[in-house]
Length: 297
Image (tube, rainbow, N blue to C red; front, side, top):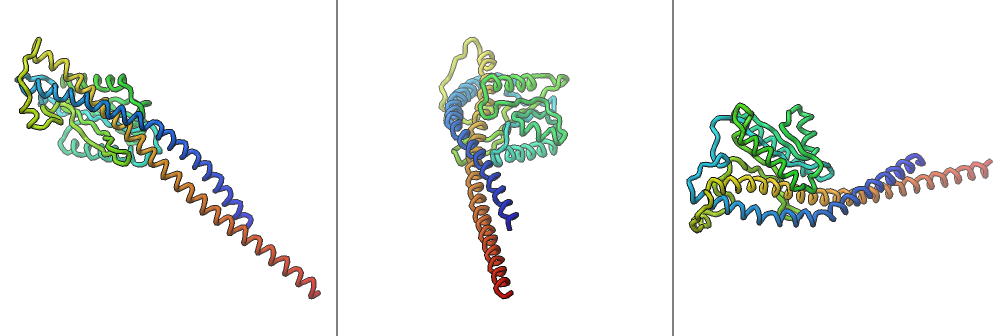
């Protein structure tokens, strides 16, 4: 009995330590989620404005830009996967990786070669463990992505898309990330980012209502300036939504873990008390039995 009581006390102590860790991680995530959510929401209007500008140019000109033209000279495809640097965020990274595996299976079924680009240590470790070669990787800023990292990713992927087949150019770019909607709702999305859709996020009626434009110096040069900005803003926006989703998932997971730790502590405390009561009862029984034996002798 004494051994059981000691085991329960050790479990209570270790669970209390874990509870403090879970609570601290919950508070850290809660303190960061507000800023991450604001950054994601503030970046969305800029991305939408660029979308409308690109739609205006492409719908009022007949310019054949490389970023809007389907490539037929290569079957190579780039896939950008946005995951977390750290765990303890529930099913956040697992959901992204499951969606990525479905995308890879679909591309393999279409006989396309895949160049995989991954952000976040969890995703990098997942694919390296499975022996899949990565064409590029970034880590260290999953919960607070910088514009510099977004520009680096965008420039790398743009260069890959514009490269020739002999230089390993790709014909498509797909992005797998988690879109932040609310504190309790985040959804994994798969977007084809390149070649650009002529109209993305703009209703047909809105497109028809766009006024006529005159482009100076030319529509080609306007597109040359707008399209790289568009790709960078889209990738940065995806990174910001993923960061907010990661923090929201971590806060929710750590809150649940804290509650579970409290339940475990209560259960172990009850079992420890039961073991202590059984130990006291046994000692009393032994004392009474000894007294009866002395009296009878």
